[in-house]
Length: 272
Image (cartoon, helix red, strand yellow):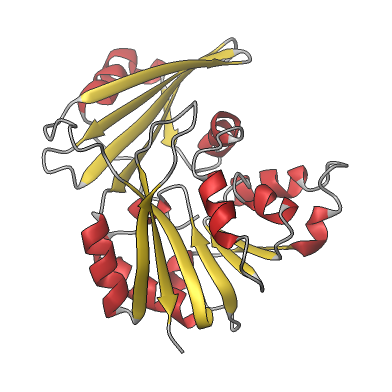
């Protein structure tokens, strides 16, 4: 994935209260780093949010796919299974190692022949080749700072063939959501651990602070943190147009049983 922001020295809201209360008994780490990567994979590996939509959009397309922020392969493996040739890019050594291990499993070995993995920062990427499709899923655009997005979009543009398509998903809070700050808490269990997803939006809703509190049967409690930007689809379409794209559509992702429809999918095209 792209360069990850470091955890804030003073965590906001409930996550900060937990960190203060548990003190030195709590391990605080970056969500996508070496400590958090395996936990992130465990919690998201079975998440099918946006998968159906992206596979449907890419079904008629031919040619290689560049998947940015591929992580541990939540989208990569379905893309390979659908017959696409994929180059996956991520900065997380931990998540890429998990994906490589997944590709050695018997059911995935035949798919691995169509996969190339690159450890690199997608914001400074220069692969020296072009692709039919560039994909950035899982609302990862929120990890690109606003001042870097225009240059990032130009780099994506340069990696596309003429008439190539850039598909990205963005967080789209429901219209009735409270615009003020406040914590939401969602618990779920995994083998040997109880996890709590804590999310907090800034007052202007331009950033979301995400934390996962993990209490396991062994080891100290773990708090994994990240801060993501929440660009509006209007801002994204304007920046994409400025980078030379034609925005063909903005559509909501279909909800799944595990997630509400709070994703927008933006489809942009590089003209000839």
